[in-house]
Structure formats: structure tokens, C-alpha cells
Length: 409
Ligand code: GLU
Image (cartoon, rainbow, N blue to C red; front, side, top):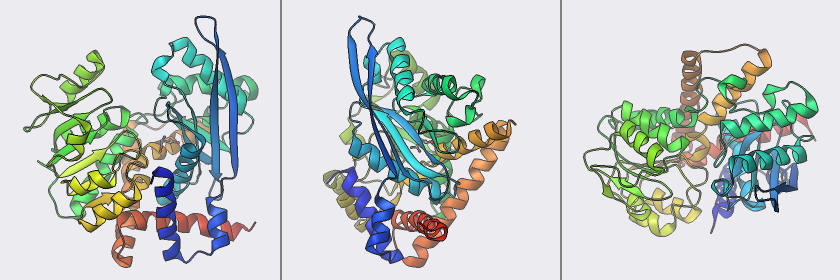
């Protein structure tokens, strides 16, 4: 069982509730367009290196397709297709006027020099520029990419199409990016955590948290939860992990990780493995790294009462069943991490209107959209007596199905 099968399983559970016919299910699951391109670049040593790039455009019934670009060695066609589909449901759950897409290159960006990273990004845009666009498909950062990569991407696109900042979101502020985009996914995770704890009548202040991943999403989630009074006891990243039963000093940990390249060895903490983190005795567990980390075996040992999925597709289907049976509340990725694409939407709107919003406006609107998304998912989950995941899928898939049927084929 992998993340691809998990996404299909979750889709079918919701489709059964919506009583969707087999032909409609097939229509909703079939990607609109799949691009697989060659990217050949000269390396710094003069050798040529060839990579495969993907852009999967899943569905555009509710608007232009939207989703990140992932640079990671495990990127392949199946994974990107699943992630594209998740973007379609995600934008629909928080009711953004978008469809879903995802792209990526099977490469470890850390193995490339800065110049090589720039060349591979420009090569990728050369290959896909005709199929993306501000009103067609709007890429953004994802795992392994950042604002600098988006700056090169938009610059390359503009060589063909002229000034068009709205084609890419997650750009640097100096190049028509938005206030609050970098912190957005982590801030959204905090908003959803607050809403979940309030709905469960659990205090967030003093709540014990374990967090997997200390990249852009994990760090900002930790920082905002720390600010909200939660205690971050454990954090792991790709190279190691740290634990402090009294709570880690998140700003100091960030400084340490920036200097050392990892959280490992942070003064005043003990070492922690990923396995230990996922099984730790905490109130809240936040996977904020790779997909597929919550397996059936780990799910049996999870002691957290609440899981907020900051990563995309962290929970396998069998694990989800185990967690549900144990009464653990799981807030699904397509709601929990929608803060990133929501502020991407604000960036796109600002670019199209050529008007700027300040941080307070961004944060206020993010709070409004995420809270409304949560309330709707919570309500459907109570009304239909289903998990929050199934409720989110029912809302997302239901909206896409209705838009598709209204528009006609
Ligand atoms: N990569 C992020 C996600 O998975 C953001 C996508 C976007 O901003 O378009 O939701």
C-alpha cells in the first residue's frame, strides 16, 4: 500500500458517500494533461546531465490549475499524478477558484550547484512554458524548491511571453511576491491546530507537540505553535532529531539548524530518531516532511491524540483506519496544509490587480479562509458521522463534480 493507493482509497470512500457513478469517478480521476519532458543541462564540470521533468495538470473544472514544483530524487510520474489530484481537492476544500496540478524533477537539489539549479529550472520552463500561464496553470514552490527557483522560473517564462508575474507564485518580494507567502503553510497549520483543539475542547496552551520536518513548513508551524503556547518537545529533520521534555526553544533551534545544517546536536536536547518521534508520548503529532511516513505498524504505536497533516499524503490508507479506530483525530493534508496555496492565491490576485496587500491583510484573509474551511469540514464530519478526512474529500470532490456537471462536457 503506498500513497497512490491511499489517495484512490480516500477518493472512493468519499465518492461512495456522494453516490458518484463509475463514469463520473473515471472522469474526475483522469488527469487532463500529463507532460513528461527531457531536461539536458551542462554541469559545472562540462559533462551533460539529463533529467526528467513532469507537469501533471489534473483538473480545471473550477479554474486555472495550481500546484507546486517538487525537486526530489523520489519524484516520478505516479507520485506527481497523485499530488496533482490532491491539489484539485485541496483548492476545492478551501474554495479557491482553482483546479489542481503538480510538477517536479527527479533530482536531489542539494547535489547541484547554484548555477546547475538555475540551469535545470530554466530548462524545465523552456520545456513547459507553452502549457502553463496565469489563466491556465500556475506553478509554485514545493519540496526542494523556493522563492529563488520561482524567480528563475518566472524570468524564463517572461522571455517567451513578456511581463507576467501571475504565472508563478511563491516569488521573492522584490519580484512581485506576496507578504506572508513563505510562512503561509506553517501559519495555516497553526490556524487549523487552534480550530481543532477548540472544537475538541482541548487547551492548546501547554499542549505537547512532536514535529517531523524542520523545512519551510515545519519550522513556521513550530514557530507559530510555540508562540501560541504549545510546547514543541521533539523535532526531526533529514539528518537527525532532538528531544527536550520541557519544550525546545524554537527560535534558538532555528538559528542552530541554519548554522549547522540540521537540528541534530542542539544544546540541552537528547537525540531522537524519526521512529521515536512518531511514537512519542505527545498530544499532537505533525508530519511535515515526506509522504507515506505513517504506516500501519507505526499507526498502531502512535500515542498522540491529534495528528495534523502538514505534509502531503503522509498517511497510508491502512494506517488511517488504525488511527480512526484508536479514536485519534486526523486533520487531513488537503485541509491542514492549504495555507500555502491560499496565500499563493492572494499573490496571484495581487499580481493580476497590480495592487499590494500588507501582512496584516494577508494574515486576516488566511485566517478567514482556513477557519471557514475547517468549520465546513467539521460540520460535514459530524453530520455524516465520518472522519475529518472523508468529510474533506466529500466537500472537495463534491464541489469539483458539481462544477463539472454544470459546465457540461
Ligand atoms: N506546494 C504547495 C502545496 O502542496 C503550494 C502549492 C501552491 O501554492 O500552488 O499545497
